[in-house]
Length: 236
Image 1 (cartoon, rainbow, N blue to C red):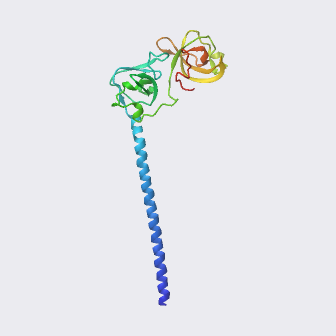
Image 2 (cartoon, rainbow, N blue to C red):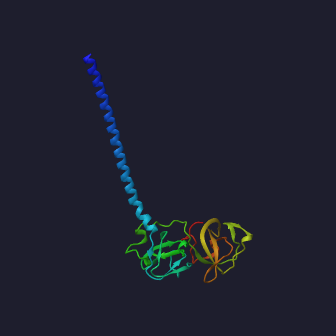
Image 3 (tube, rainbow, N blue to C red):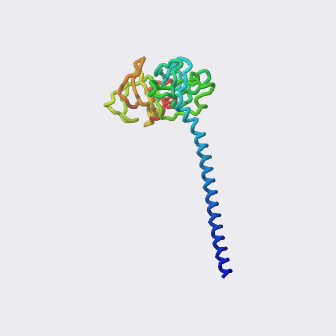
């Protein structure tokens, strides 16, 4: 009787010890999992917070400057001024992209129309405490932001609805007039050139004016030997 009871107690004790060990093992695993999750969360915050803060912050413009239709100075061929910004004004920047050099700085900041302006501002004119937009967490621009160039049309041609397909309802261009192009596409080759520009407006010498929109071949556009694609326009 005594031996039987002793064996039973030993089994109970052994079972209890096993349960305790399993509980301890689960507790340790949960602790380690929680610790790893905490480390990952801290790391994630540490990586994303600066970018989020940079994108939401407003930065001071150091001196009077114009916003341009592309990341190049307004006196560069085919680019124009979209607005004037006074010294001391604060602006938020959606992204940055490389462009023409301003005092050795080739970074430009993009601003959206929601701030009363749209276009690109030279990084050199933005007060960033000695840094550049690409060094403070501002993302690089994709192809979704607007960019425009103006160019003279060298032939009277129909404005096409899609590259290579005429649309009489769109009317025709006027030879020698200046039009504004906001993107490029590709289509059937015209004298070996497969690039087509999308007309977004008409340039009257001072401002962009509305006109019939559509495509014309890059062959019929004067860009000083360049194409709309090589000028940096995004793909339509």
